[in-house]
Length: 90
Image (tube, rainbow, N blue to C red):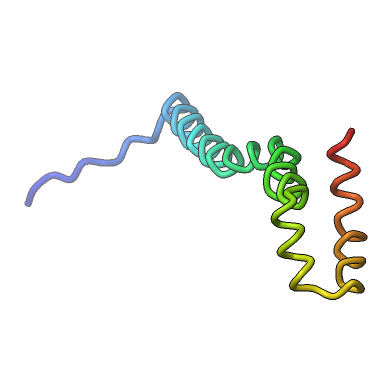
């Protein structure tokens, strides 16, 4: 019958090492999830300007849009865009 080795208790150093490694991996995972969100928050104002404000200031766009909508709807669109355009002027 072969001899079985008894398990040695894990030292406190090994436990601490495992805790640091696992904790580090968790922190890296959280950073990896949060990091892609930051540019979106930072550049949100620029994106609004690029896609919304600059677009509605193009004469050709306004001409085509004016032909497709009613005056009442144009008023509603202008009301909706007013806060965005005003915030970009700052």
